[in-house]
Length: 94
Image 1 (cartoon, helix red, strand yellow):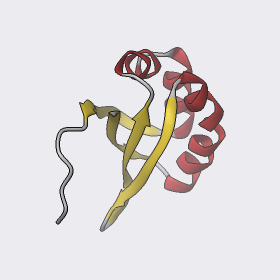
Image 2 (cartoon, rainbow, N blue to C red; image 1 turned 30 degrees about the vertical axis):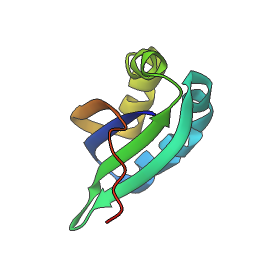
Image 3 (cartoon, helix red, strand yellow; image 1 turned 90 degrees about the vertical axis):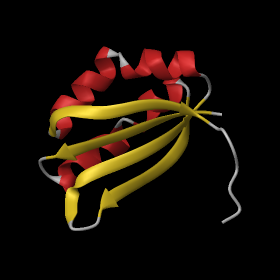
Image 4 (cartoon, rainbow, N blue to C red; image 1 turned 135 degrees about the vertical axis):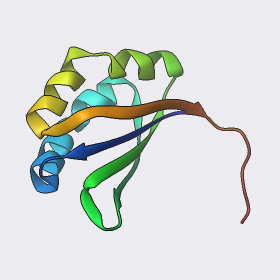
């Protein structure tokens, strides 16, 4: 299963989250299968998101899309996000 792991800082989490939620149909149309949203303890404006994706090709295409760039700009993402394209390797029991 391919994933995109994204970490970035936002100006205001509540503003960012509203635009992030609004953008869900674009992610789904681009091949996102959902994921997990996390915030850094002690810094609620530092966000990490792990998205499942249909394929690495679709993940790369979405990550380079103007739609995503526009949403991130409107949402107040600060600086360049740290983005990794990853795949399952081994399941861990503990």
